[in-house]
Image 1 (spheres, helix red, strand yellow):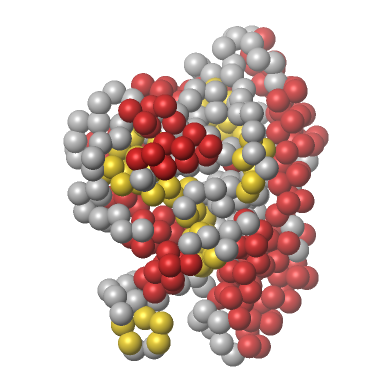
Image 2 (tube, rainbow, N blue to C red):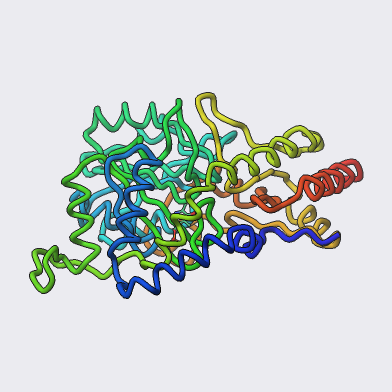
Length: 368
Ligand SMILES: *Cc1c(COP(=O)(O)O)cnc(C)c1O
């Protein structure tokens, strides 16, 4: 048995002809920064998400911080973020000199708890970043209600949820803007770095477009102090190919997740992920929880089954943030970090492998 946590090369091999064709088309075009492939990807991805505009940028982190900056979030503002997200969500806030305000998740889904978010709003709060963690949409209905009442800017962190649905609508089209990452391991992964901002607000899109390109629309005429956060044109060409099979690959993830949900015995302290009503997740990760998580991971590793921890250290306990302020106790985030384990999942993992993982976990549960 050798079941790696995730393999990326089979994704290239399955689409080799189309990807190689995209590569040659790009090289033959003679135009290598922004241009046709980027425009093409942006309009295809905007329409996939159901938003009016898409602006391709260099990474998911840049997408988060550019969207915040374009919305006017500034030094001294408070921005509500999940306590249990990947650190990028917090870093985007910190980069602007604003303060991340962590809010604990609902235990079952691990997504931000809107009621707790509401309690953290002060007169300095200007934005909230719900993260659709592990491929499962956050409760956008409640979040939008709260945001409307308190005039908050809502930025979805959709790095892990391309294609997910919340009450029939795609994540990435539910907030005022959304940030996407095309890091290779994401559901819509490039073959290098990439990111995007989607929004249905044309003014916001225009600002992001300016900021990503040195603050200029016309070359050498700089309207604002911008950055070079442009998406790479070759990655855009590859992403057009990947986008055309995103739904099918998400379906494959779904059937593996269903096998896990049905097959793993929810006993001896093992917890399976819960799906919120109204949510259609895309299973970026399949995470289980167990109090003896480290022992289980060691056991799987002896059986040559790969697994990972998302994430071992919550942002407020990381060296990067622990000295900044007293973050208070965030027991749910801390507990998740101690007990969560991500099992192998991906569009090229076989059902047979998943059954083997299930058998091993169930036999470990029986003897623990
Ligand atoms: C991957 C990820 C990001 C950052 O994306 P990069 O492209 O790596 O910068 C942001 N937020 C979450 C939740 C992520 O998983």
